[in-house]
Image 1: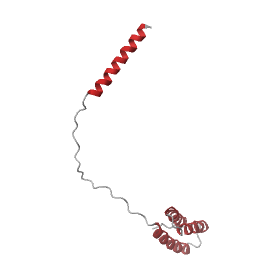
Image 2: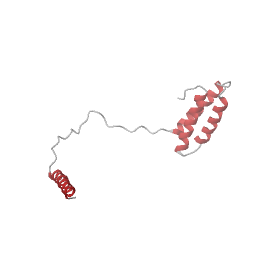
Image 3: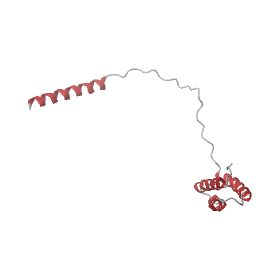
Length: 115
C-alpha cells in the first residue's frame, strides 16, 4: 500500500512541476508575418436578380415550348413551368429562387440549355 502511495505522490509532484514550469516559461519569440499580400481582397459576388431571371427564363420557355411541341417530355415541362410561373409572381426571394430553378428544370426537360 505504501508503494502505491509513494508512486502516486511522485507522479503528482512530477506532473505538477512540469505544469508549473510550462506556465512560468516565456514563449519563444516569433517573427510576425508581413501584413501586405499580393492577392487582392475577395470581393462579394453580385446579388442575383431572380425577378429578372424569372422574366427572362419565362420568355425562353415560351419559345422552347413552341419549338418542342412534339417533345415527349412536354407535359412534365409544362407542369414545371406552371409551378415556376406561380412562384415567380411572389415577392419572397426564396420563392423567386425556386421559380428560377423550376424554369431551368422545365427547359432542361425540353433539351434547351437555360441562359
